[in-house]
Every structure is written in C-alpha cells, then in structure tokens.
Image (tube, rainbow, N blue to C red; front, side, top):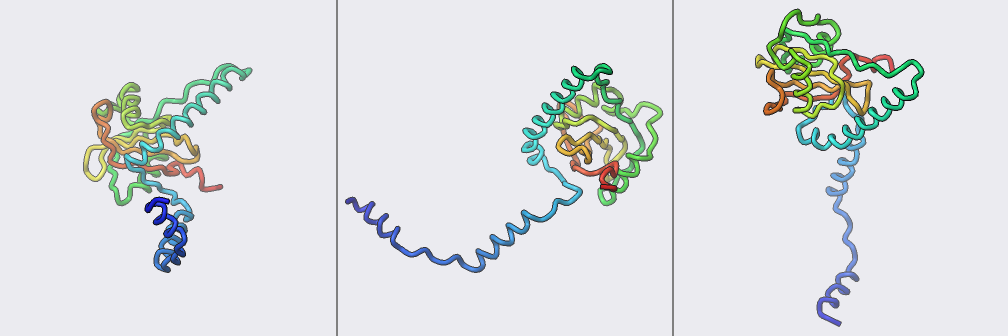
Amino acid sequence: MSDEQDVRDLLARLPSPPMPPAVRQQILARLAEQQAPVAPVVPITRIHRRRLNGLLIAAAVAAFAMLMSVTVQSPSGPVTASPAPVIKAGALYQSTDFVPELQQRFRAAPAAVGPTRTFADSRQGIQACTVAVDAYGSVLSVDTGSYDDVAAVVLVTTYLPDTQYEEVWVVTPRCGPGDDLVMRHMVYDVDNSTANL
C-alpha cells in the first residue's frame, strides 16, 4: 500500500467536526433570503439581461409558434400585427419618483404632435433600438424627454415571461447600432393590470 493511500485511509477514519454555529446561522439566513417574496420592481443590470436572453428567446419562439398556430387554425383569418407604439414627448423624469411618473405618463400623457428628433421618429429607429438593447417584447410606448436632466427616451415593451408586467428601458435619444447605453432597466406593472388580481 502506498504512503498516499495510507494517508487517505487515516483521514477517512477521522471524525467529522461539527459545523460552527456562526456558519450554520449564515447558511440559514442565506436560505431565508432566497425564499423571500419577489418585489414588484425588479432592477435588471446588463449582466442579468444577458443571463435572461435564453429565457426571452425561448419565450419569443413559443409566442411566435402560438401566433402561427392561431393564424393557421383561425376561421376568421390571420392575426393582424400589433398596433404601432404611442410616441410621447416632453417627459421630465427624475430617478427619485420615476415609477409613479412613468405610470401617470403611460396612462395619460398625450401622443406627440410633431417629430421628437430621436430614434422614435421612425419604425426602423425604434426597431434598431430594441435590437441594440435586447428588448424582445412588443413596443407599447416611447416617451421622449429627459431623465435626471439628461436627454433620454423611455421605452416600454411587453414582458414575455409574464404579460401582466411590462419591461422598461431608459435609453439615449440615439439608441441603436453603436449606442446601446441603458440608463435604467426594470420590470414593472406599468399599466397597473395586477391591481385587481
């Protein structure tokens, strides 16, 4: 028998020491944190967004397959495309009260009456921005203005994993190829559709 095997055998016969109480408490605290309920506002960083890409792509494929199924089987004809997003202008968002202002403007702010001089002035520009920031849902609204006194655009899209929520992106006015800066990104019930659940 080799010396290495002798050492292994001796180590295997040693009793296992008890877990220190401090370590046990840390493990239990971490498990309790993981079981805590999910908050309604979920900030998402660029790293989280990359990790979610697989899930979002799978959801998009499933949604497309369902749409194709409805298109083929529906007796009333093919499903029409989703309506164009509402383009708004003049938003003055501040990070401190962003959520209530977002909800208010999403529901009540009127559509812009003229060009916004941002990517939102064309469907191609909006599509280029959604591709740049990896937004997979349908665009519901594009609100141009400022965020913390910096020129910005708030993009609200459907959230594919849970349609009761929306995905919100605060981006630059030049969002698109070569400009994928995201100032804020979150998942939130913007239209308050979960209020009566």
